[in-house]
Structures are given as structure tokens and as C-alpha cells.
Image: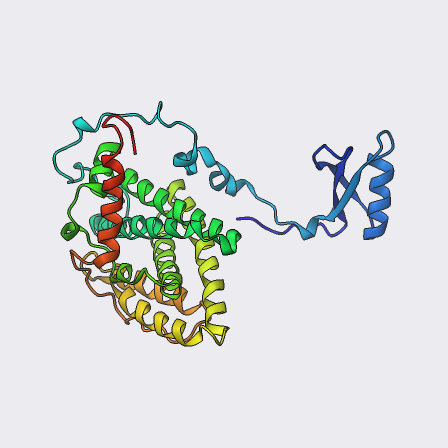
Length: 347
């Protein structure tokens, strides 16, 4: 994970040699004080060239990556949907797509020989596929908020979270044996009554409810990804990114709870969403595993600094055909866009 260095006497030097050139990192130095570090940097790195700008930063004021963060920083493998490739490398013919949306026969995650969690593999797989549906709808719903130009920075942040939610849903399906055609059919060709989204999806409407929905879904995905993060880099990347999302939603939750204009509405939304969030780990039979996951979810939700959570003590079963108008609109828009593309173009 990113960390803060402990070298209190080491400074990093950034220099710009002209008004049109970028500010570049040029080296490091050791100095007893900040003012001495700046003058030493000027003499060391500006002796041969005229400098336009000089920045000197104590290393302990930086947050730096470590070797363990390489998977999180590898955008080409972490976020393939963001890489250029449309339509050449992502072109396919949907006319050969399977007639049904059933996933291919695959070995459940965790069922490999010698894996002590093998017996729990099918139950965990059902949880993952259910959370993938939640992420898919959440990502689509957040995409609608990118056009809020009143607060452009927040709109971009929410759009990025929405993109990553969609990418994580796709990654989850891939890790569970879905190829491109099967994943496409799973997300776009199944009728709504076959979906098993959490009941929180139906509340993805106003902004306070959206904040709480984002919070509880990010917490649930983080908890489940932790189970496989040690032996699967993709799950580790999902966990790390969802924890970033969780921090974002927590900041919003604390702000909405503190503002007099929104505190009452948000408290009501927080209670409603957390009450429905009891089914986030309810996609399989209740056992010690799902109870433990639910307990960790409750701890993360309770650590958000917002009182009034109504999360049940134990997970409750998911029901097929839920999601209401939110899921119906999401599926209708996706299918409408697909129909307007040529059959051989990947959506």
C-alpha cells in the first residue's frame, strides 16, 4: 500500500528550466532544514542552467507507492476498458452469441485442489455474481451524474467511480469463467426477473440515498475481495479501489449528516438503505462464512461516523426480480444503445 517515508532529512527536488517546459524531478539531497535544502538545491541543480521554478519537498511530506502497488498502478491490465482499441481490437459479431444467458460451466472460485476454501466455492461464487450485478447497476446510475457541471470535480470523481464499478463487474464475470459473449448476454439479455440485485438498488435515486448505496456496496465488495486478495492480484486490485471508493462515500456521508440543510433527509436515507443492505451477502445459504462476512460489513458501515444504521444482525436472502424502476431503466438504456450499433461492433 502507499506509505509515508520516514527519511526526515531527505528532500526531493523539482526544477523547471523554462516557462514552457514541465516541472521535473531532478534528484534528492540531504539537509538539516527546509531553507537550507532549498539553497542547497539551487546550488546543486541550478549551477549550469537558469531555473524558472524550483520546488523542494521533504520526503516525509510525500505519499509514495511501494512494490506491492504495481498491480494497482498497471492501468493496462487493471482497466482494459479504458485502453484505446475501439472498434478494431474489440470488434466481434454478436450473431454468434449464445441463445441463453446462462454462464458457461466452470470450476467455482476457490474449488481448486488443496484450497481449504474449496467447499465454500459455490456459495462465494454466488455472492460474487450477485455483487457484480449491484456494481453494474451502480456504475450505470453514477454515469448519469457526470453531466453535473455545477461541481465538475465531484462529477469527474463520481464518473471515475462509476467506470471502475463497471470494470469490476466485468472482471468478476471474467474471473468466474465468462467469456465476452457470455458476459454480454448475462448483463444485457436476461430479463429483469432473473436478476438478483440487492434491495438497495431500488433506492438509487436522490443524492443522499446514492451516497449510502455507494458506501454499502463498496464496503461489501471490499470485504469479499479480501477473501481472495492474497492469492489473486485481480481481487487485490478490486479491494484496494473499492476501499478508495468507500473513503469517498464516507466523506460525503459525514458532510451530509453535518449540514443542517441535509441532515434530516440524509439520516432518513441512511436508515432506509442500511436496512435494505442486509441482503448484500444473502445470495447463498446462510452459514458461518456469510455471517462472518456480514459482521465485517456491519463493522465497515458502522465505522463511517454516521449514526442510525439499521443493518440487520444477520444477512437476509436476496430475491429475484427486485431493483424496481432503477434496474428496469438501466437495462432498457443499455439494450437501446446496443440496438443502434451495427451487429459486429462491440458495445
